Length: 52
Image 1: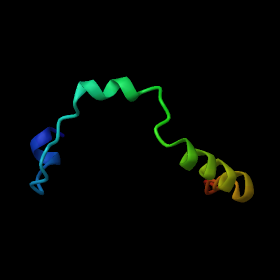
Image 2: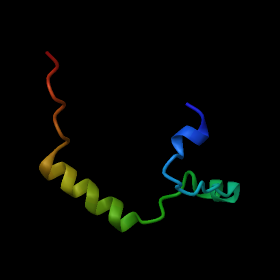
Image 3: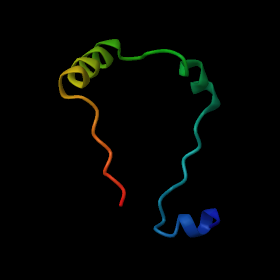
């Protein structure tokens, strides 16, 4: 499939600024990450559906 077929609903294509790569290895919201980790410890990860 080419980009024209994928974009048949007229959704604008947005280019990602390469300058954002400086955030690739940084945690921007450490308090939210900590909260999410606590929730995952309590609830656990979702179980995959068994395949038949």
